[in-house]
Image (tube, rainbow over all chains, first blue to last red; front, top):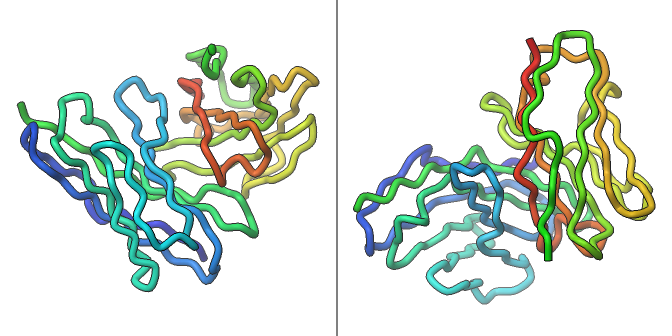
Length: 114
Length: 115
């Protein structure tokens, strides 16, 4: 069965510092897509970053970058220069080329300390 | 552009009743996907509609159904409500089908409480 594991239920970081959120997944597929979504207290889910499995280059979006290790099935999110507005639940998710159903991790609650 | 809207935002129903939730996608988007979010099960995919046709379905009982109209607005219906159906129901829209592959835009959700 396809699963996504986020081993850190909660993380905290000092404002302006860097934090890394972990995600591992299990799949037998070769073509798939990986995502990090952010859900602030307002509950509106927002796409943070997207990675296509066939691309070896790690995706980046401003202060957000990923470390994609395909062989290890690992997809961690690095947030640089953390800001108060980054406080939210972060969900790792993936979808396969054969299925297109998003499989979600349990989420990591990120706390930003001022 | 207006974002994805969901109505109502909050709903309280009694066991055994049925409920209909509505989702209006971003203008021009033709795909609408629905997700259920609960503390116990987390986020789970319900179904995806594109051009008025259900293209993909998650592992939910037949009590959960949906439809999409010609203007891409979608409704989700749950019949014979159970306590376990209490959840935040999220919808997401995207321009193309198989929306989960690309960039999906989520609505604020409908919080359903079943008593």
